[in-house]
Amino acid sequence: MVLGIYGAGGLGREVKDIAELLGSWDEIIFIDDTVPSGGCRGIKRISFDRLCQIYDKEEIEIVIALGEPEYKIALYEKVKEKGYKFANVIHPTVGISPSARLGRGLIIKAYVYISCDTIIEDNVRIEPFSAIGHDCIIGESSQISSGVTVGGHCEIGAGTYVGLTVPIRENTKIGCDSVIGMGSVVQRDIPEDVIALGNPARVIRKKDGDKVFH
Image 1 (cartoon, rainbow, N blue to C red):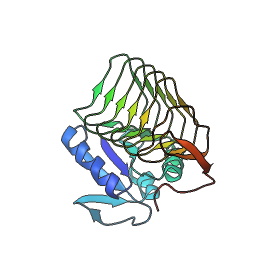
Image 2: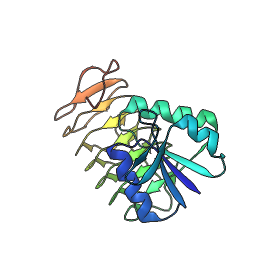
Image 3: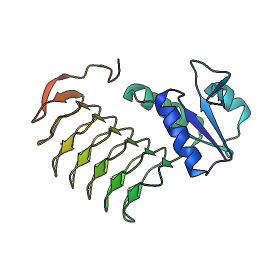
C-alpha cells in the first residue's frame, strides 16, 4: 500500500516522519499541485492529477497535510470526490480509549490522549500534548493545536481551528468554521464562523474568510 501525503510543506514533512516511524506503507509519496514534480526529502512528489493517472484506487490511501482550514477542506472534498481512500497517520505514543470512535484521514501526533466515548470525525488533525475528554465530538476537518485540553461533553464544529494551549471547559460547544486564538480560555459556547480570543474567550468579529496562517 502507498501513502500519499497531500502537502509537502512543514506539516507534510512532519507527517512523513510519523509514517516512516509506523512502517505501515510500502511507499510514501508527496502530492503537491504547486510544485508537482521532482523530489522532497528523497520522496517522489507529483500532482494529484498525475496521481489519478498512475495509481489505482486500491493501491494508495491519502492524508491531507495542510494547516489552512479552507484549503484542507477543499482538498479533502477533491480526494473524496475521486473515490480515493483516506489514511490515518497516528503516532504510536497516542493513547486512545477502546470506546472512542475514529474517522478516516486523521493526523494525530505524539502524546495525545483521547478519552472514552469520544468521536473524532474525518480529516481531523490533533497536534502533540493535547487531551480530548470523554463524550466529545470533534467535527470533520477541524484542527486542534498543541497543548489544547478539551473537557468532557464538548463539541467542536466542522472546519474549526483551535489555537495553541487553549483550555475548553466541559459541556461547551464551538460552532463550525470558527477560529479560537492561541492562549484563549473557552468558558462558554462560541458560535460558528467567528474569531474568538482572550480569557475568557470572546467573539471579536465574524471570520469572513480570514486565513489562520498569513
